[in-house]
Length: 624
Image (tube, rainbow, N blue to C red):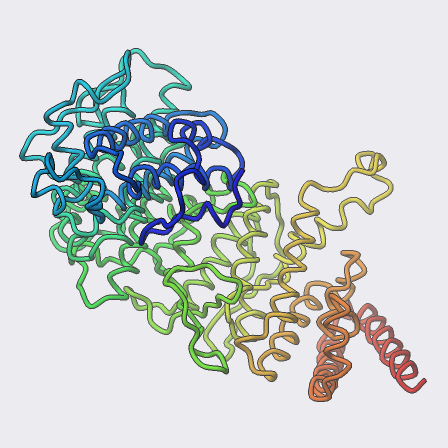
């Protein structure tokens, strides 16, 4: 196989000689390889052959014929379940369409005597359509279906759609919702996913950006038909729909909202705004698409149609007894770790915004929507719709969805307390009976929320609730330590232990290592807030979980040798740690005083004693 650097396609033109690439017919087999490098090389070789061929021996008609053959093979390959065929064929089809709609043939491959004067002006896709219209029966291999011959009035975008539906729906009809006859089980599944990957390839190629809203609505209807076809197609179809809206212009989006999407959201039944009572009949995927649309319009100067301006995340919808939205969000636990349901990523996007402008060295420049290691988000000051703040909604999601619904915590006494950023409810006396799937989702959500740039008070009082920490970490990590249990004598650990360890470490790393957007003062303030939350859960948190979580946050232990060297050389960090230790001791002392029933006092005194011993030992080691 050629070097990977040779396999990278340059859209501006290829300057490599043709014998450095894979033979044209071999590329189709290599596109289904599980090796990503081989798929990339095969795709670049195919595109080189069609769009960047050099030399005088090539006739324009033969290249167009190869191009049409390649389009058919790329589309039909989307329905193959072999290897990584869908990934390879879909990514290649996306590049194929992008080049077809943007490039014209080079002059050296068009014979002077036979060339049509307009050939050098037409895009490749136009030439494909003209050739297919004249020679449709001669462009496919023997014994296989022909590409559909386009009518003169069909646009390029509609032509691509007709080919996609023709070869992925087992029908010559352009209606993707037409019942499929003669296929069952795995064949229908392959065709559904083939059509989905094809639609995503069209979206990612960028060819719909310049198309009219009528054609875009046709593509939307195809996605909605997939959404309605099977329950397991709902989430990927909703993801495709959201990606389409992020690609096209919002003016086109506003037009289609009054068309097929109006029926999708049942908005046609409402004259002014959607009534929040209708949300109970929605799915998690509809909620995700609805929030995504509201977020897109909020970030632009274009107004969303009035009927879609009803906020869906409010105090009313999240606290109305057995709220339907809460139940809908709880049921997303069926999507298990390491992936959360699409709706959660959309909710966080709705509640947060980029915090890169708060970086000390100035604003960070990155592609919109790029997910980089340095990405950081903070709660929005103003939500797109509704009167509640982002912190209010986060508070409700933590209490109503994670604590109450996912973890089964049934609060008996709610005591309203006020802190710097608003109100929160403190839970006393509770019981829990949560499944592993629900606890896995709760762990993943806590990991995501903890990565946001939250204030110290929000971390301590809203996100890291003591009862939540006990159920998710102490009970989980402690489960294999009970020697009297017959189930644990075999040495088996709890199913969620690796996940709990991973997320606990991620929370610590976000505070200790990722300090790019924090001042020194806020960084140690957040450390102290997390330490307080862990101690409130149980003063012996580290010993119960068999971790060094609190020790690392206090700077007594380190995650790596690099971190240890950094702290030992930085005098300002040592001074900040001293302040952190003083505040920690003050917190422990206050906790002892406030513990009038003396339920935790003995544990806190033991923790304080062990902390003093560690500090004294480290001090003596430094002197030596």
